[in-house]
Length: 275
Ligand code: PAF
Image 1 (cartoon, rainbow, N blue to C red):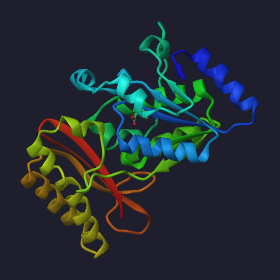
Image 2: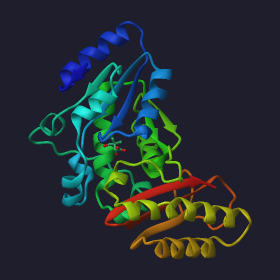
Image 3: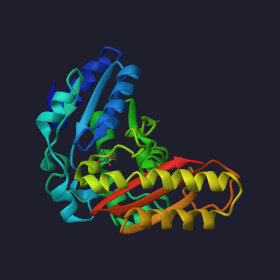
């Protein structure tokens, strides 16, 4: 079932809940790949009814060119979602009616890493995800760990705003060579695609060095150098952070996460792993 308005979505979810179903939500921006489909599978395994939303959210693109280039293929996405209970496809006007003026901002967590390099991105993301939660009234929502900072921000505002929804993080799906699956990968030329594996290799190399007890500073410098050598023109960050607060850490005393963002062939990629 394709649903394009909030009123239709609410009516459908109310009927499902009246039947006692647990409702799961998988928020996406379309251009679906196996990573998204693994979230859908998980949602179907855990919930009686599953909604997948597809909305390319203009408010989370700090760069208009990036928004214009974002891959869109509604027919292909719908074919991949066959069997899902509802696909929510709101228009920009349905999501942001005239006069819309509110923003969800998560302090500190949202101001670092991606927040520094993509100003406004997390405000746009947090605002639309809050709206998707309140529009759908889903019981559980599924997010990929590939966007680790996004996942921590969502957990933060769900707690802070007492939103009645459970958040499930799902492991990153990778290509055979280790590159994290992303809708952006399809914009890489063949040579850049082959070289992009250096991102996962750099994360793993730095993680091994930190686990061996080598200083994080040196391990991160070596990782950045390896990315440049592989052909990444810019490295926005490669940082070792507390897994939850994302504050930088120098040694391993609590669960930590290595996070990276870098550009190759004009395409900005991000990835992260647990340490
Ligand atoms: O991760 C994404 O694709 C987007 O940030 C999300 C969660 C669908 C919100 O637009």
